Amino acid sequence: SLSHCKLTLWRPLQVMEFYCESCETAMCLECTEGEHREHVTVPLRDVLEQHKAALKNQLDAIRNRLPQLTAAIELVNEISKQLTDRKNEAVTEISNTFEELEKALHQRKTALITDLENICSTKQKVLQAQLNALLQGKENIQSNCSFTEQALNHGSPTEVLLVQKQMGERMSALARHAFPEQPHENGHLDCQVETEGLRRSIQNLGVLLTTSTVGHTSVATGEGLRHAVVGQNTTVTVTTKDKDGELVKTGNAALRAQISAADGTVTETDITDNKNGTYEIGYTLRSEGEFSFSILLYGQPVRGSPFRLRAVKPCDAPQSPDDVKRRVKSPGGGGGGGGHVRQKAVRRPSSMYSTTKKKENPIEDELIYRVGTRGRERGEFSNLQGISTTSNGRIVVADSNNQCIQVFSNDGQFKLKFGVRGRSPGQLQRPTGIAVDLNGDIIVADYDNKWLSIFSPDGKFKNKIGAGRLMGPKGVALDKNGHIITADNKACCVFIFQSNGKLVTKFGAKGTSERQFAGPHFVAINNKNEIVVTDFHNHSVKVYNADGEFLFKFGSHGEGNGQFNAPTGVAVDGNGNIIVADWGNSRIQVFDSSGSFLSYINTTADPLYGPQGLALTSDGHVAVADSGNHCFKVYRYLQ
Figure 1 (cartoon, one colour):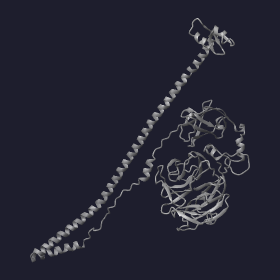
Figure 2 (cartoon, one colour; figure 1 turned 30 degrees about the vertical axis):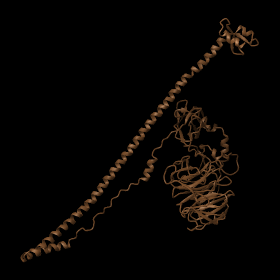
Figure 3 (tube, one colour; figure 1 turned 90 degrees about the vertical axis):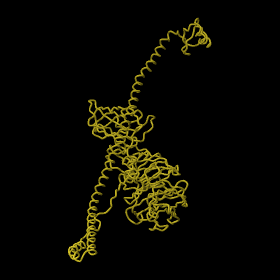
Figure 4 (tube, one colour; figure 1 turned 60 degrees about the vertical axis):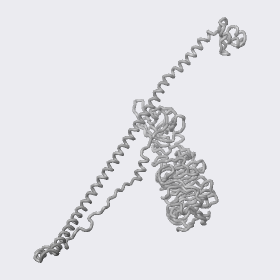
């Protein structure tokens, strides 16, 4: 029995000489004939060596891990030391930089004061010389007057006659003398120091760059990791991830790539940081053969690195399915025909826009149609600004310099034009933003009249709101509560009104912080009823909740993916992706709901020039006011 087996451990007379393979246990002779009689039993000594060998193998296996752990400890300690060293170096760099700036400020202060002293001294010399001449003249007149009065009042006739000629000539000369009575200088000496721009620069001076990217989770993709054609530019994409395998959506990682031949020669690589966590590695091999392609992040290999790369002559290169597709239609091409399967815009790999990739085919963009040229007639525009769409298939455009509103169908057919120039209620002076409510009423932000005008769907004036509060409204949008939200470009704030014009709240002021703006342009509302605002001069997009509490912002000044040069129009699609018109860079960018860059809308073939408002049409396309080209354009946009 089981209890018998347990007891045998304590009874030296019952020697454990057998082993039951079925139960994996040692036992005595009595147990082999009892509980285990149906089981296969063998002498214990026969399996002892076998089990000892197995244990020894396990022992060796875990002992062999010790050097790996020791190496890992050394590596992590080294990185920790590097981090501390780098932090100390950065502190020194910051201290030195700001000490230099303080020194430069002190030098400029000293120079200004020195110049001030010199200018003042020069002016004072002129004034002092004039003062001396005036004082001398006054003294001469007073002494002559005193002497003559003395002679007249107290002198004898003889004395008067003696001095009359001499004194008369002297007084005649003094009467004729031209004294410098008008000031020879002025007292103007000001010092103007324009500090606002400098203060703003100082507040934003210095950027701390880091990333949580690690090599062992990051991946490289692309045919170019293993195959290349001699003489052809080839690219691969590196997607960086953190220790948990989560995508890292910022750039600046220290990435190195090296392609080595068997003889030790190294091929140069060109690395492009897309600033969104992906990187393009471009290279051109000059000879055929086998190569080792090493990709290191912070000195550690990405997954699969080093790769075995084989280069062949162009005549030996097989035709890939991608090449066939590309001949049928270029990436992003519009229109029917061909077997090219277009990728959704939100899923486009950033490599499509790589500067290192060479495109041999003419590029077709996503344009479906454009409407308008410069002019004053229907379907013509002058500096169009806001654009909005309706659920029943209309596109509504604020024709700013023509002081009117024009309405079109989703396929670009002219439907309606209304509005007259003027500063009275119902008239338009400078229409900028535009929105359409659920009833079809059209809300127009009038920048110069400083109010919002509301028109019926057929263009009849109904009401104006915000007069006396707004300074220069530009973008306007409607939230799920029927509230009217407008970005006041001039006042640098956002107003929220009820549909009857009663103010709900306002937020924002001029500045660079999270709750401040430098010329907000357009607004959009996402599916969470959050307010998305383009901050033109701060080159960013800011997102607030329905009460105006700051949530997050994205974007910085530049030309890279996810950067802006003065953003204008903004719209949000059904998935929460944010579409932004990048005015200064003349392009349209697409971001996810958290502000991470996804892609561009391809506008290459018929370039934009200073795009302003944009909106999503009821059939899922993007309509944009191409202000500089005096037209609006409608592009394909796949959610």
